[in-house]
Amino acid sequence: MSIIKFPWINICRLMLTPKKLIINKRTYIHQVRSFKELTINKLLDGELKFADDQWSLIRKELFDSGAGINEANVDCIIIDTCRESDNKNLGLNYVQHLIRNENKNLNLATVGKYFKLLYDSKKVLDSQEIEEVYRLYDEIRTKYPIVDAITAEYLILGLSLTERWRECVELLDMITITSSSHSASFSSIISAAFDHDEFKFGWELLSQMFPRLQPSQRAYDSFLKYCTRTSNNSRELEYVINKLFELWKANDVLAPSDVITAIVDLLVSTGEWVARKTSIGKDGTCEHCSQALKPLDLKPEDFQALSDLVLSKNLIGGDVYGKTTPEELKQFKKFVDSTKPYDVCIDGLNAAYTLSRTQKSSLGQELATVVEKFVSQNKKVFILGRKHMNKWSAKHMSYIRKHCYLFFANNLSQDDPFLLYATLASGINSYFVSRDLMRRHKFDLQDDKTRQLFRHWQISRQIFPTYVGTNFHRTLLLIYPPKYLPVAQKNSHGWHLPCSDDPDLKSPDLHIPKPPQTWICLRRN
Image 1 (cartoon, one colour):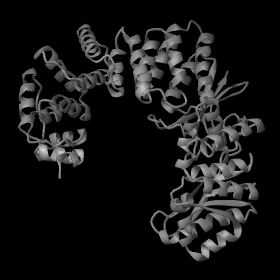
Image 2 (cartoon, rainbow, N blue to C red):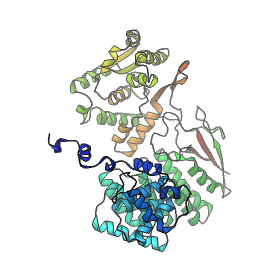
Image 3 (spheres, rainbow, N blue to C red):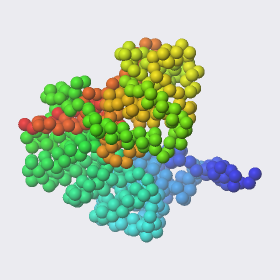
């Protein structure tokens, strides 16, 4: 057999010894940290006092360790090891030793990791560090006029710490050409803009982030410092902060609790506002001020527009052949159009497997239990299944057939578009039962307003099945949507702001399946 017919990794195995095989970063770090006698580990563990002349010894020890470390990767491994051990200063010292003492030409990966270390260290760069950032950046851009997305993000992190931060926008454009921009890229430029009192610049980028991305704590901190530094009175401060709240409201943003607390504390410090942590009752009433939040209702014309667009994009769109066959699609539409409207549409496979993760023999019983809940309420139920479900328990499948409208799709068909079609075709009052967050379908919609309409419809119409209790005594629980819109809301007295206790929240599915539990009731004195 010719060598070119081997998979890539097998070619590597033929050409390299096992110790030199390519392995991922965490494997390298684990191997390095496992050799406790290495000087770098003694430094990281506090067993040895650091001295500048130790770096040559450290590199030699790593080369001789048998961990597959060589001249090409040793710098990145040392930086990553310091970083993972939460000793960024030691990592910075190493890179600066290479630059200043050994006059070494750093490769692209090492420069990127150095810039990220500088950014994450949250230090103010001194003149020598700024000069080094400029030199390294200019050398890379001269050699590589266009860089990949990962390198571009690292360069943004380093350059955003300097007076040349505006040049980061060109790098951000490079990222969007090849991939989706990350929060770190946007946030670092936003932070730099606010730090340099360029409000309009920073605000435009902040607005572009939502709703797909969440700004970092650092970006919000820079925003608050800008507000404090430039506001001449409480009215000016309120105006700027209200702009942020309105931006959250328009994009269904659930901000971290620490961010909201810092912003609210700034308003309260003026003496003109009071704030209390609160919760929202099932009826949408604030437990503190008794004000009712706006209900989660779509206007009929908005629902119709959403329904038309989602159906055309997701089921009748150009990629239909990747999701089903023309014959199956025709059969499905004919079935639904002749039996709709339904009160409830259930993703049968999703619901059954969610409730019975281990025992496949009980899948039919689990689905029948869900169906029984709705049958007892005299609901008209549609179930989307797969053909292999015919092999499930005959007793339970007979019950399901008797009480539901059941359509079996081919085993390889994508079921989400079918479920969306059946639900939307049934009208504005129909619910669907699934634990699928429908992320792909949201992002298939290119228009921001339509994506928001889809989110609001999903929040108001999706029921999540789950069990509470133990395996010995379980109770089926159907989590219904809230009766109110779980986003920042403004009234004549002030704001109700939902909070996230997760500082690293990145998902846009912030209100599903449960609305936020913690809110801030902010009222004018």
